[in-house]
Length: 302
Image (cartoon, rainbow, N blue to C red; front, side, top):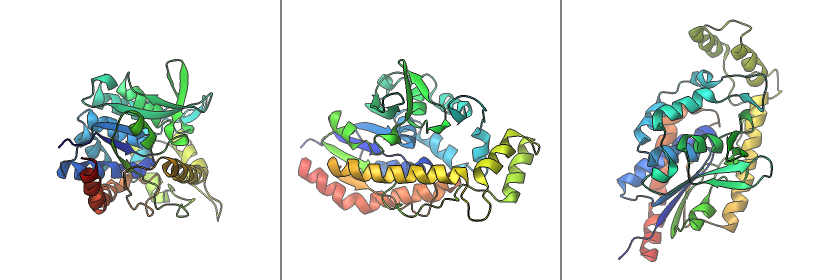
């Protein structure tokens, strides 16, 4: 008997993407290895590093994140098409994967992006792995668009949050989809991402910033809120949550996967990168819940 070609579709979800690490770990324990991986946004980040043999590195990075660690990557700029240049985070990725090219990975990989000028869904299947990952998570307004092959590319979550269709197009017989937004509709906290005064002071002091630094300006403008007014960051993240949820429902209804792995992440905000341990564990638990369906699908398609 021949095992069907397995495609793994890793969905978008910002910080909730740490759950992908747990999913991959549990699939490994079960002896299930994808023959191809397609990822959107943080799904492209985790999926790409997984195929590059760097799953341990991304897990160590995720588990090391503290409540204020995200400030290390907020390289604020006052011009251009984004609030953050993204160079600091991109440097972390390049330090991890070096000059690895997608075509040199041990299995086919595709990073899903969106062309800024046309809104077209773009699949990056060759070239620099680091560049492809950065283009896939280039959240509009937050991270700078990435220019690849004369096209400006932004976050793939705007067109295909859970890339089941890409796995099918690349020849997968059995598609496993990891949907990070399966249980979060209506649960978004518009104030998520806000820091306490003590946390902000700690972050500022540890990096030597003064009260008029870009860090403080960003914190007060984008994280604080007065009374019942949501912060700008909260509105941005809540809006992304709604888009991802609605678009995922539509895309998955039209092209459903064979097996859906749905981590229960409603209690985690899109910016809670410091909750990696809990989200990784939930990723493993989600695979555990899906194993009966997965084994049935493998039996039917073998």
